[in-house]
Amino acid sequence: MQNNSDSIIAIVPAAGIGSRMAADKPKQYLQLGQQTILAHTLDVLISHPLISQVVIALHPQDQYFQHLAQAQHPKLVQVIGGGERADSVLAALNMAKTINPSAWALVHDAARPCLCHSDIDKLLKSQSRFPQGAILAAPVRDTMKRSDANGLITDTVERALLWHALTPQYFPIDTLQANLTNALKAKVNITDEASAMEWAGVMPGLVTGRVDNIKVTHPDDLQLAQLFMSQAQ
Image 1 (cartoon, rainbow, N blue to C red):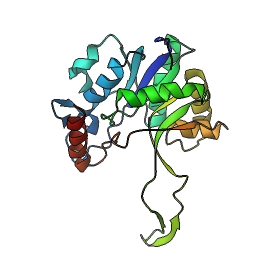
Image 2: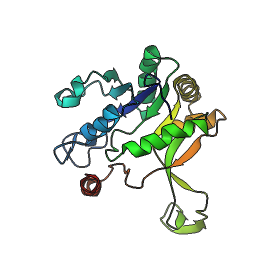
Image 3: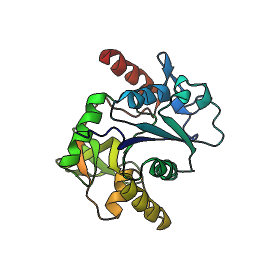
Image 4: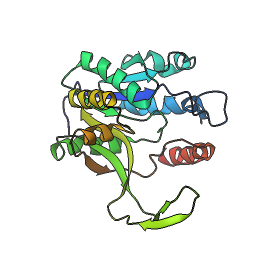
């Protein structure tokens, strides 16, 4: 595992305001138990002993973050994000590079509050096996179907080598910043950090993560996340 606590900077893209889940605020600010989703996510990252700082990319009109207790934490740095996730990650990487250009970035979704330290530890340990970087992922367990535009099944997809991509995703800051910048200039569809690395010819490693590391996307996910967090306590 990394033993230099100055070499890991967590990146949290939290600038999106489009997904409100039928609520009056962005989903990362919805209540999950005693705190918001984002507050839980930040607590996990801030409290990890090997993460030196957390850079969060916020929407320029964000009216909620300042009210979180975590907003004033000395580990946390704020930047203004962009219109897409990739733009926000790049803005945070630019800041992280001024902090420590030789550091590694641990990019994590703001709406994944159930992340645990043990999964972070597994990802950090993987650096010796995957010096090019790696992501947390979960093997696909269900039968996978491909459909046409009308919702009809066209074929069954072999699931043996398929994975669900999770976060965090873990890469050297300078390499990820360069690949993400070039991919955006080339107008490549970047869905996560690994896709920018793949576009540049890098093959990131896969590290099996816990299946309870869910992304809160739909209203039902809030109840599921609450269940997972209550069982972890």
